[in-house]
Image (cartoon, rainbow, N blue to C red):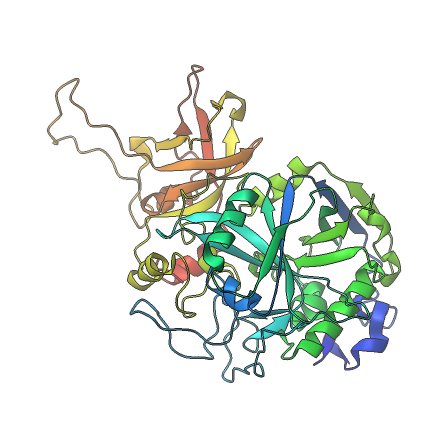
Length: 497
C-alpha cells in the first residue's frame, strides 16, 4: 500500500506509513516546482457541535452478518441469492462510486467474527477494500421505504493494548429515531450473537468539520484525493486499514485518544475531484471531555496558516442541502421516501445491488432492475421562504410549475394547445404537483422533483415557474439547482446508474 502526493507533474510515493506521520498532509513545500505559483495558500478550519446525534453501540461475533441483513450497504464480500431480484452475481463487480479498472483486486478472506477488521467496502479504485472510517448507509422497512440513514463507525478507531475479541461499532442516528431503530434491532436479533445498547447521550459528542483551501488554483488536482480519498480505498487487509487510520489520526488530530470514530465525507467526491477549493468534510465522534475540537487539530501538518471558524449547526445543514444531500430524520419523515429517490445509487458504498437479501431489498432491486424512477432529490433555493407554512406534523409542501414554462425532453417550451377542448368551469382536475419540498434551512433546501420536469428545472432559463402556494397571500418561488450527479445521470439517458 502506498500514499502519494502530487507536486505539479511529479508524484511522491510514501511507502512506509508509520514514519510518515505529519508529513503526510504537507501538500505544498518549497521543493515543489509550482512553489512560485502556489505560495502558502490559507487554510480554513470550520467546525460545529451537533447536539442532536445519538448512538447505539453494537458488538459480538455475528455483528457484521447481523447488520448486513439490515442495512443497504454490502458489509460482507459474499452475497446470498435468495430470489431473482439479486441483480449482479459477479463477486468482484465494483459498486456505485467506483472507478472501473480492468483488474479488480479482491480482499483476502474477510473474517467478520474477529475484532479490528474495520468495515468491508464494496467499491474502491481497485475494487473492494477494508476501512476503519465511518460508512454512510441506511435502514429500510419491508416496503423499501427509508426508515433512517446512518453512519456506521468502527470503534475505537485506535486500539488500546487490549484488542477486542469481537468487532464493535457505533451506529449514528438523529435523536428522534434512535428508539425506533433499537426496537428494530431487538426484533431481528433472534439467535444472533450480538449485543447492543443505546449509549448515554451525554457521554459522546459529534462534531462536523470542514477543511478548505480557498486560494488553491482550481486547475490543479485536489490534494485530498492523492493524500486521503484514494489511498483510503486501497487497504486490502485489516492491518493496512488500521495503519492508515492511525496515520490519518496522527497527521490530522495528534492521535488524540478521545476520538472514538471518524467519518470522511465521500458522497460528493465527484465534485470535489474537479474543484480543489471545495472543503473536505469530516465527522468526529469524541468523548464528552472534548470542549473544542479545533484544539485537537494538528495545524503543524500544514505549512501555511489557518483561519478557525466556529459555525452554527444551521450553516452545516445549509451546506448539506446545497449539495442535494440529507442528513438524518431531522430532514425527512421516516418511512416516506425510497433510497433511490434520494440518489443513494450515486453515493459510494451506500446501496448494494448484488449482496442479496436484506430488509427492503426486493423493491429496491426491482426498481433498479426496471430503471423506473419518477422522482429524484435535487437542491433548491427558495425565495420568500419565510412564508412557508410550518405545521406541527412534518408534511412535504407541494411544488407546482406554471403551465407556460413546461418543456419537452429537448428543453423547448411547450405552448398550451389552443384547439384543445376546455373543461367546464368547476370541473377542472387538480394539476399533479411537480414535486415536494422535503426540507429547508432558510433559503436552501432539497426537493423531490419529478424527472419529467428536469428539462424545465435545469435549462438556462431560470424563470421557470416552480412555486409553493402558501396561506399568506404570496407564493414561495422554488429554483432547482443542478445536482452533482446530473451529468452522469444524463449521460446514462436518465436511467438508474
